[in-house]
Image (cartoon, rainbow, N blue to C red):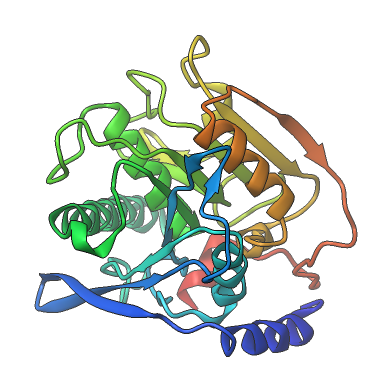
Length: 311
């Protein structure tokens, strides 16, 4: 895997530079305690932009719903950059609905696995809303839920987009009335459904989508069987309510699922999105195809596929 060793060392070094300032148990579900970490902005960081308070960033980790951690060292460097730029970060646990699941290599097994993915996605969304409810119930923590951007990688991006979808469709449960995210930053995400194409009843909050055009793990466009499947970033960007949609998509030509590891590498694009689309409410949209050989890749003799999650 190209760059894997060097990037792992960089991530480890950066992880040593930032530690969770506060940790709280926000819920107990299925006999599991779920925690969140709050990383505060640096003491000398500017926490406003043009006199507008910067949002907090809720981060949902990736790992195919089978693994991963809110304490993933690979994300800590990104947290550090966000803190240095005046953003609070909230990293959350969620239940891993695919942990221990073995996919049967048959048509029936694939359909059952897609159903299990839908359940896992919903568990993650429910846990996100529980974390939001916890923050709303504890204003002394200083993380106002009316100024919250959700972001995630891979499975975390799927959960983030599904949570925004639930809010847009009036299906958010357990959150304050009129709750809405200020934005979503999704790295190799999509929406999983077992009831056909996901349709937004109204435009969601501003979306920033990053996806590799050759992603074989989380579909760039669509993968499915009958009414079950996953609809990826390209599909979502093309099927939003166009009259009010606020969506930017960065398509990485020939890249695969490594785009899930790009938080922080896209800082200029993230920053512009946060300052323009989120804070100022400017409907600034982009649809770009990027070819950049300097970006990290998973360069092997074969392409990774969804089956690799279950080996």
